[in-house]
Length: 331
Image (cartoon, rainbow, N blue to C red):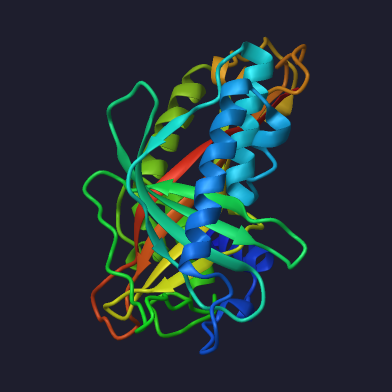
């Protein structure tokens, strides 16, 4: 692993470099870019198209209405279908709630919050689904989905008299962390653990200190086998979407990568490194041999509560996460 301060700095630089400060999402006082009724129609079209594509194993159609983190996760499912025959996941949905911000320019976007469960599984999770349209010539697509973690709940979202939500710029300073720094703060703790300076700004949990604990255990287990295991949570070039909460904070939705490498010391050749089935399912070339290293990449969509900057004790809290192994390579 990198030294703590170096890793924290790398995470922050990576996040700011790829996600930047996007002023186009600031709420406008004019007419909505997409009406609430329009958002409902886009959502229903997505459900119909994605389910029929998943049932038929039609990757062309299935990938046509997803983008960003959602595309990476969906692409991984169709890759696994091709490589192993594993069916693409299909869902059943409950009653949705729509949060539509009035924003200037592009991207146009809205949030749908809905309970859903995998077909055949009775356990349901409230899921935050972001739909976006990057430019005027693009089609609406699912940009990311994050399921609420156990024990977490969605904060009340501020709405105007017409029922529309309020979007914030990614550099907004009315909240504890500018929205485009939330992911970098999470990454620093996931990489360095509770000793990270960033731990004072974000709460402990499965997606912060939990990732550090899990990955540290994997590193120790691989070391016992004579292998070097490392990990890095890194920013992804996906838009950051932010809504004002009723309490003056923000709900921030963003994508992240978790990159891992398991290799022989100094990346020298050695005995083949064992490859888990879910990792090999993402190989684009099935005959890859792991004589040097196995690299894997997970793509996640997260949602976090960012408290008001006036709060003297509150920390940001990651409340939702959904992701999958989306890339793997052996060398």
